[in-house]
Length: 280
Image (cartoon, rainbow, N blue to C red; front, side, top):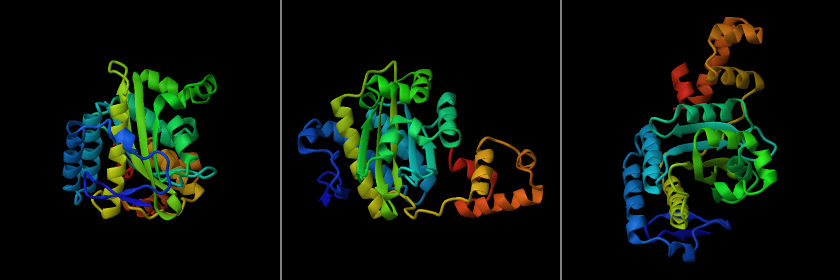
């Protein structure tokens, strides 16, 4: 089912999902709450010809609207149980905390998404539009033990509360597009009004993506062969071509062929552009 947004004039994805902004929740929001979000999304739409700048502006503005301090815009493929998830785009808050950069890098290279409560629950959900709050996901002892590594990093980052919203897109809904917004411990927890505003944001963003107002490549690409996956992982760790070739037991010529294939796969032209697709 597609609903018409009374606020932004766009289409909202609501394919039998249970987490959409319900009428009783929309009553939490007043014009003074919604207007800054609508203005921000209008500014984002105006940058449709500059995808990188658009994504950066989107996540920075959502932080301002929601009163959060740490954020990331993300696009991931293979967002299903039993598959190897692949990052397509990740854009961090401007001037991010070094620990936050470290966490995002570790999330991509060293850890399974199932180690993160948001990602783990989202992967196992078929909802077309999802919104997850931090506290309910780690409310019991079993969950706190399961997601201990993520909770340790949250403590280091002084994260008090947060919300993650994603939209399933692409063929079979295997790609997700969305945002993660986290609030530091020196600030209060997210209120019901904040959560309602986040729900509205992801619904409006879904409509903008469908209309092309937010640039997003919805074509799911084939999985990388294991050898290329290893080259990508080592590149993201900052290893030089010489170090990679020796560690993998291949010639520098063969390694450069692998790197060229990676560039073609991700449609980039340099090591810097490749790394910027994942962390910036």
